[in-house]
Length: 120
Image 1 (cartoon, rainbow, N blue to C red):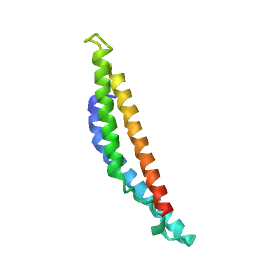
Image 2: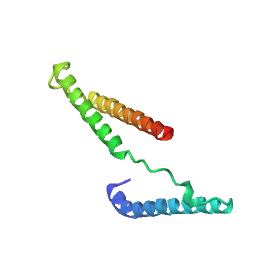
Image 3: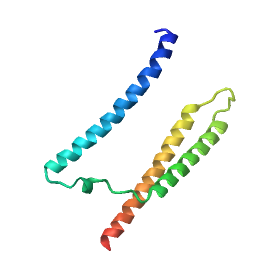
Image 4: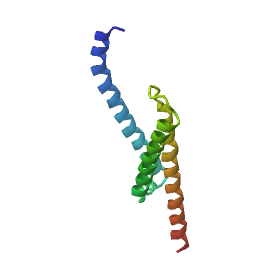
């Protein structure tokens, strides 16, 4: 397709796609609520529990990502002696590994707290 044809189609298709997505979400959630009412269930009781430890989760994720970025920088500047060679894979890998480790630690802490609340 030519660039000028795409320039005309994008302003038309993007709002249509956004409307269709929002309509679909609202329609499906309404159908779900109606099905629950037909079966005698309370639609308000099926909401997911709120994660009260979101600050802990985000904090450990960001700390892990920052630590991964720092370690990737150290690895890149010490192990790879060529300054012309940028290694973006090392940065992405370290951010993902340490960010995932932070999320795993957050999960373990939340699980420990939930177990402690059940015992009380």
